[in-house]
Length: 226
Image (cartoon, rainbow, N blue to C red; front, side, top):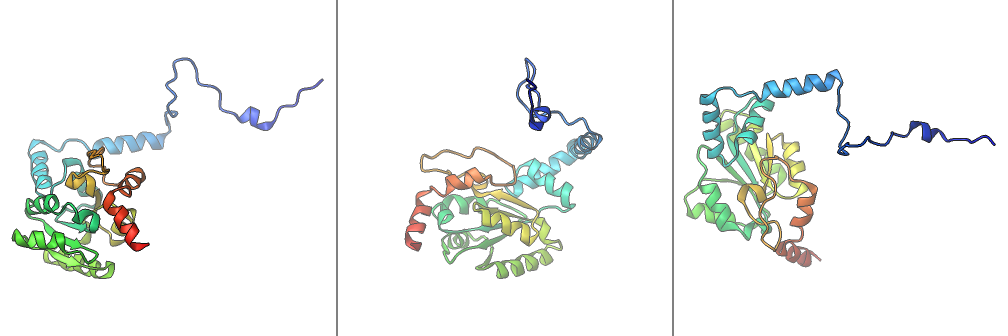
């Protein structure tokens, strides 16, 4: 009897050898080598004075060194402002958020809300100058006006939000960075009070958005909409 084997049997990846950790194969191509070299050269320490200067500038914006430097390397601009996508969920933490934004220096603050002025009022009480917008079209105009006043581009602004729609809006507006509101304001993602798990990644993972929807304030919003 002649055994007939399918084509898949010949194309199947061989089983990993003993001691294999189950990780992906190492990319030994020249493109991967060139990419690793370029990444290492880009993140090479520019010197103690420059690192300290960037660190101080990042702290004024409430960011970490890597997040600030990534925009500088990617777009060639220095971050100069923040766009906060405020909603009812964030309004429940207005004290913490207002304190964080009031601590910023040399930073233009733009607040885009959904009609809830809780955070804006808390900032005005503290004497913090802010620009506000109520729609995406209005937000684009406010960002351009603030960028012109600072003699820079919209890419010098970063957005703080927690919804996936906010992240998409950040890309459409041409902003330099998106930061999770849970990371930036150090607020809990879930009712259990669990703190932020990842920092300075510049994006909100989908899993975090799923946990954020379980927030009791978000549940109240969904109940009101229904």
